Length: 348
Image 1 (tube, rainbow, N blue to C red):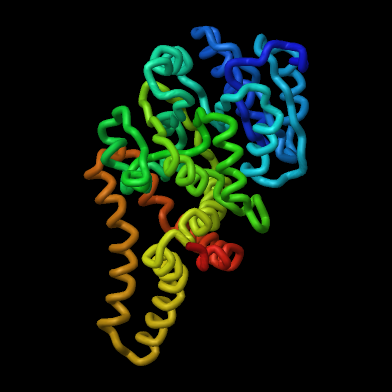
Image 2 (cartoon, helix red, strand yellow):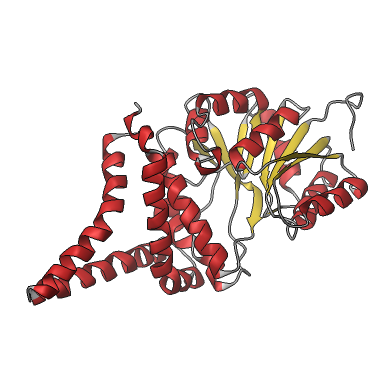
């Protein structure tokens, strides 16, 4: 535990946690190991976002035994955006390290940060390089196909990259492994503050877009962590549903083309079903064959493209096995997103 009379730490590590009891001991353990291999002074602030598992007991034990000050903030379930906001408010340092509860921090991450930070602009923001655990079950490897499809240029050959507004959509980024000045984080949160249910808003894309419009964000393979994905099919599908909704929030209102694309993604599947049924009813056999063929092509093409962009073979297999149920869950999330975030389409 820490008190207000303790020296202000060099960095405050903020972890938003919801039902993360199985992960927290190893997650925080990896942070402690990395701190011990550096000279950084730190505190850990864990925000329990209304967990229903053993998270409170696990955190109490960690706080009592950890060699680093650990404080726990508890709130009703409001989603990661509000959890990270509350963690930032509780943080004592002027510099934050936002860290996801499912990650394992590389043992040399803080040492790498210490070595290079003095050579960079003051208050440099860092985005961690976060590959997926290669030992994850098959279902856990699915997302590597979409990420290699969109960000394969970086993922095929990871290298230090300055994220700017110009390359923002071509490189991986997120708030799950992010070092940022506290004042800038608070400013960005206020700029994108959710009007409605905070649990259904993106906690990363809009925020980071705001950040890179004001300063560059360093994506550095030397500052890395390992992502441990969901390992059950129900958990994966629920996550896909949520990601569909957050996808709408991330891109709605950022341009006419994106608005049209989002609406098209929602409208196209039911239109295809209606046309297919009509083709069967009226005996238009070529159309009845064409629509399923186009659907299969549309589902398989990303796997082929991602494989050419260095997606691992096991990830491609995962995609091919789970793309159909994923597609329905993600599309359902898009439908919810279109309803929940409809006002966002009028922005800008």
